[in-house]
Image (cartoon, rainbow, N blue to C red; front, side, top):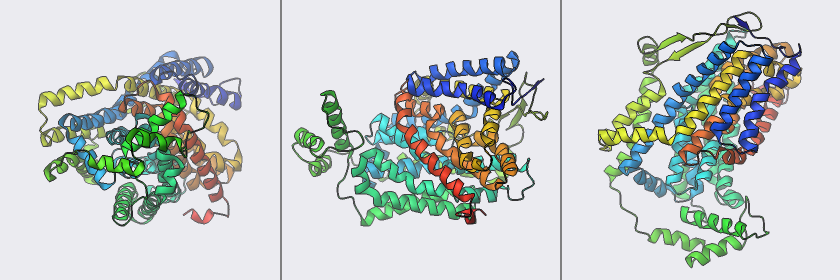
Length: 588
């Protein structure tokens, strides 16, 4: 038996916490600083976590290796099982040619890339997050954006940033359900229920929702994009935020993201019926501008162009390359020979996503959930070789949940089979596409399994708990730092659900000792955690693989880390104010 020790290194909590941070620091330095491939950085960091666990935290070698194996398997099932099969469904639409039909359909809503980013990455991504979660929204929306003409790295950055505000209520509020389970077990506060925790989170993440669409249009087109499309971005963010708040507080916590996504998308579409941007940023124009930007950099021009548009250089380059200005570019696109798609073709193009929504909606009916949660559809397997207790001497659960039928990845397979029938893809071609999907994602598979193995080694050896308890020692100032714990948890595990399971109880226990509100601190864990999603190596690997940039996760990381930290600071300030008389009226 192995008992976790919070002060394993030199009898000091601070020193133990510092040593516990070594694997995380290694991972982010290798990924963002040295620009190593994500799978290499993941494997090296896993090795470091094993050394720290065995040498510094006195975990038996055998149990450390079994912990890593447990995490690696969890990385494949259910996480990669979802992503692989979701991308397979997408690949089927590509193989049949119907993804081009879908792209043209979205272009008819608006050919403007800034608005496409709002509708697809934010609204449609939120709907996918609500139904499946665990990386599915990034995997699907990033390739949809590329099909609309977004450059690979920009598509990846937009999809990752968009996957923030909806995360807390993802997979029908699975993170909040998990949070309620772990927090109610260590506190007698009657408010630590799914409904009340969801209500509190619904008074934090909607504020992020208002801001994120504005960030997306800035990422797509800089300051010009914000000036030209602030209205649809604000309409989208406000309608999503208000809907999420209302649903989480007065309707249904599990349905919060579904309702918010549908209302936001409908609001933007209705706005576009009466309003159009003064300048349209088409894929062709954006591509020409980015090519001119790259050419300007390669020629060593001194003018700084990053994040903004040059008053003359870029527009001149567009005009020179096409013989027309920005308005001419739009006309040029309109003049191109675009295939006319029949109503049946358009319906077939949307069919895979309608099928996904239908399957997930049916399977998440409470009676169906209860039926599929039992054998032979779901097995709870005690992981062999692990006999661990926490610092208090209580057993640490090491059970692997093998829900082979109701797992989101399995549901995606059913959706893929139905999609193949609808799109008339032959069984041979569908099987070939499935194999090719695995080959395409081989680097991402290694990365995700390595990082989840690292997370399990850190968790079961006591490294993560030492780090969390040390941060919790700040007393009342913990209200400001509380979201950081959630951010760390999601950055490491890639899952808000896992971060809540990891730190939820600790947040409540610390709040009680520091005289803070347990409900607020528990909610801060999940609300802060959503901002770590975009920098987690798993999601970076998924996004990079989906856009054909496997091995360049570090490039994407450097483009999103600033937004992640900036929004985290905002969340820390909000939670800090909610713990004071200034905003404590927001706490139910």
